[in-house]
Length: 195
Image 1 (cartoon, rainbow, N blue to C red):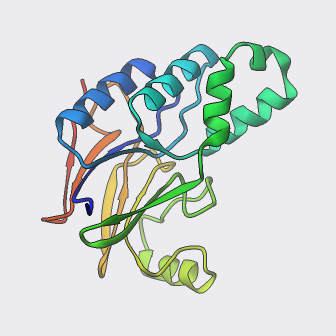
Image 2: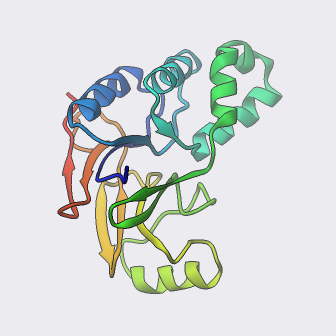
């Protein structure tokens, strides 16, 4: 089955309560696929809860820069390592940097930043030369038709020819960013409210 409706959950940053509501809202939007763009880690106890929510609900997730930094800290600091569940550490360790999937408009992907670089973001201006450079350097596949990402903390959807780029934005208290519905039939996006 090709995917036509995707619900994307933005940077979590340990907001377990918001994540739980966003997952519920994403599910009620009747998406074929629910993804999370990473930066799951926050405070250690909240990190464990967020990892459990994503795992239990089988949300397709990728690792963000905060997750990578958190895992690096766990290796260096026993206090941090002992404050989060081993299950959460394993969950974050197992996350890929990107996931690809087939949609009705072609190949889609989700990653945190831009490709394997979890600290990069798509520019708000001069998108064309940026994409040309990423293609020339083989940092992005030319056959992507949908890219879902986070990191920039902005909810912004852009198109370039047949390519749609959906930056989700972070989960936050006002629930206007951080959860985005993408309907590929009409190539339309809708914020999914989770308050």
